[in-house]
Amino acid sequence: MLSASKDFKEQEGGSMYVFRKKLDKFDMGGGVIRQYLGEGQKLNAQHWDMADKSVVKWHKHKQEQFGYVIKGGFKMLIGTKRALLKAGDAYFIPGNVWHEFVAVGQTEAIDLFTPVKKDFPWKQKGGNAGKRIKAKK
Image (cartoon, rainbow, N blue to C red; front, side, top):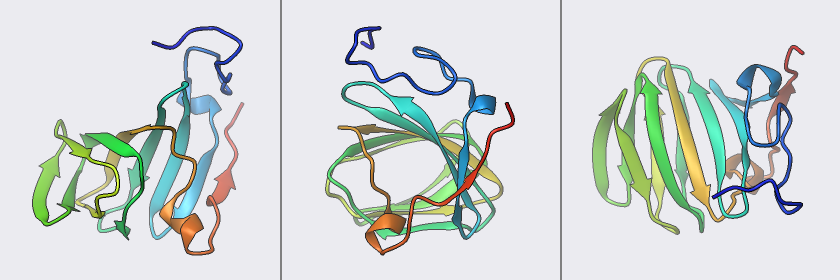
């Protein structure tokens, strides 16, 4: 459980609450926009907004990942298992398992990572964290 201890990292928009309108977004290219929602001591959260047919290419990371599809959907490949997910569906990805997402329609999703994930596939290929889109404050 998150606490207001000195170990808790305050996020823009509040220490225990997140107000998305106050958070910057990052244009990752290819129709993928991410928004860092914050982190606790053992997990962090991201919001994804993806254009139809945009792709988060085949990759893996040490973190376990849980995701929830808010709207739209994903054609997903986790290891050797394929699935079509729609709004209201969720997914669990064990650490160090290869996976890929292709958006079906305009798609929004939330991902949780544990332990905290700071790197992205784009960074690993020599890119950066994406072009910052400043929040309107």
